[in-house]
Image (cartoon, rainbow, N blue to C red; front, side, top):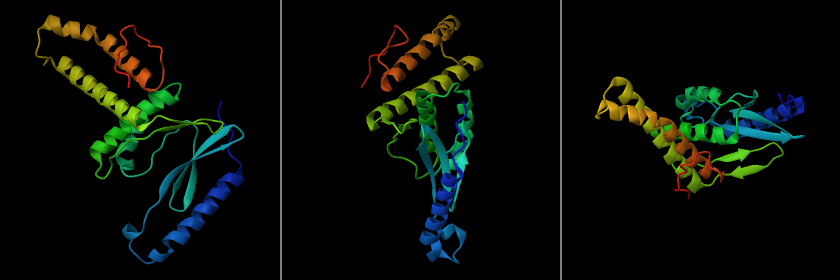
Length: 209
């Protein structure tokens, strides 16, 4: 079900604050070249009456992000924004699913964009104003898992399709036949990292941290 649109007052108040804040903090740069004026962009989540809305604040304007849409801000926004299209395959959306997709996008930003780095933090914001912090250590392990999945998918798929796997044909077919189990092992490791204690696969990984 689509959440109701926020009242006009919420959007009006946010835009009023954004305009005043931007004017007061950038007025001293009046007359300078655009590239010398500090920029501002952030995402704002507002919870009211058991509904949550996401807004994007850029410079002196705040826009409502439509329900089901995805966005990003900050260094690397232009480079990683196309990757947000991949999230359309996440149906229905879930916190665990978004965490995995978001970690992949953040990892790519660290690899591609100068100045993007450090520890990745993730916070789930729920209706009712509840929050869930995944923790720096777990996020590091999720990043490692995402990197392994990327290497596995690209390395195995291209090697098999191109016929360049350096093993006998029968052995290559055995590797491909075991791919579903590899996916299940990845899935079980991820479920442990996000707090699910019941594995979906009998061959559960034991590297929970």
